[in-house]
Image 1 (spheres, helix red, strand yellow):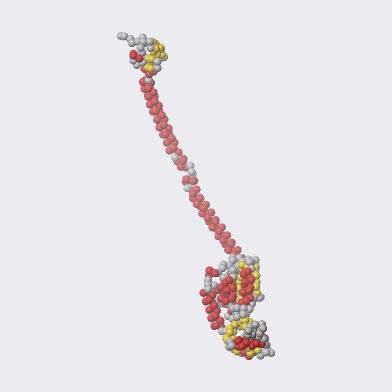
Image 2 (image 1 turned 135 degrees about the vertical axis):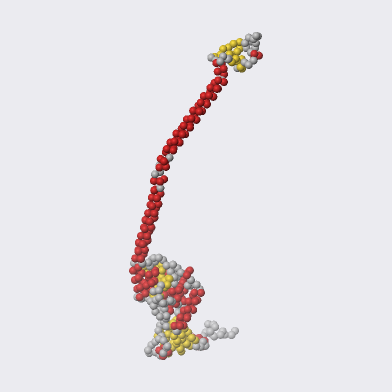
Length: 408
């Protein structure tokens, strides 16, 4: 069985020098490369002919170590400072003695304003295509925030403007202030961290990102993609008050509200006590005037109704018709009396006729009614001899016994 290849088993390891030499050889094959980034640290020592630079990626938490000749930094087309955006041409190197990687710089170029603006425009189109600027994503600001989260530079004019104006407008307002770098290589990371902390705080109702004006390079952190996406991800409304009126970094477009200046942000976040009191007083006056007008209108309407004859003198119509009612009553009474008298006479006539035709009147004229038992005698055959008869006359009745049919 053959021995394992060197470095592939613990029995046959590489020595450190061999690994370092091999890594250096692989890296050396990369050749010259152009790299863009932001200077995060610049170590220029008067006693050294080599300058050490840390180049940071603005959109990610990554950096590279650079080394370059001193005269290359001093003769650069622009003054190199921390936060400057640069292009460098360098050769990747792996230093076997310390096991470190660096980029040996041979040329340095400053990123021009035109290029920066072009990149910001490309990023703007990308974010717009993703819908981060759409109005439907804009969260409404509370009418009166309980606590305002403020992200700004330490002891900055922007902080003074926001707190002073807001407190003057509404003295009870409170602030949760986070002081961060607002330019330079560390600004984006610090602002994103402060933004996340304030967004998590339940008492914070609105977050203000405030900074005074500056050059395009100074305001670059506020057009950073990482910061823009962090603002879009917030659940708390965010107000962007960066720069002055002409400045328009990308965070203005992503934020829920863009204020022209920090002072303008304070005016738009909290209401003015005096203005609100004046508005309340005006509304009270208008409502009182409207109520008085309504009451007056209803009083006039009631007065018109009461002035109408039917309501002003409800009995007038009865009085006007009283004589007519009395005449009608007399007429009705006469008609009823006449009707009753006529019917009384007719009843008397009928009664007299009935009396004349009745059996009592006939008996009074000398007639009699003969009954055999309960039957009225109608024939001599009905009363043979010996039949008891009852004879009824006008003043009473007598009994008799029949002797049979009489002979003439």
